[in-house]
Amino acid sequence: MADPTIADFLLYHTGAGANADPALDLGGDISSAKVLNQSTTGLSLVTGVTIDDALGNAVGAGTLTYTLTGQTLTWTPFSGSAGTPVAVGADGRYCIQGAGTLAGALFVTVVAASLPGSNTSDTITVANQTEKYFKNLTKAESLAGVIKYHCFAVKNIHASLSMISILVWIAANTPGQDNVTIGLDPLAAGDGATTSPTPIVNENTAPAGVTFVNPTTITHADVLTVGTLTFGQVRFIWLRQQVPANVSAATAVDTFNLGLSITA
Image (cartoon, rainbow, N blue to C red; front, side):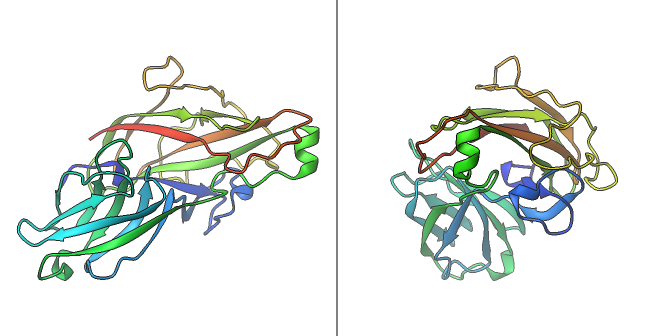
């Protein structure tokens, strides 16, 4: 079986059940709902492939190419270049990366028996997801100032192998007047249900025992050290959004990026 890749490291909502509302990501059991990075449309001719998520792509239309010889997939993102072909002749999850400055990726699940019988390609249009971690602020919140806390679960979904030395940092903070910091829940790795953080009363209540930091690089002293996750294991990460008082100008695209490093 192939080694774990970033495609096997997923972020889930909390709040138990199938919660997908970030306002209800208050801790508690892991939800069945994944936090997706970018949406995709247009997959048709490249059969046997499901695009589970997309990450780091420029918004627009790229090309997913299947080559029969070698049974490979190649991703050319919008405004980017074709990445290295990835052999997908066995069932499993794969990360198909582009190349160049805007080298985004597609995370796919492959059913090998259903792959095309000839060379083919699809035009895949990528769009950004919105309000994944925090919902838009109200005018009242922007004027008064507010601090919000949301909890998410990180999980190794590989079928049999561990991920080690997992690190998380803030690769880019928001362009708005708010600021996002991160904190690792003190609970040890577990299944995300029998071991899960006690839910906070509401999103304005700070979780107990969590230290929030702003590590801006993988080598930063405060980088979150998630450690090792065996297959199926979960740890919980908290996000804190701080908004100062008297913010009167809206930021149309107020995004931030989390950095991730794993060792298979």
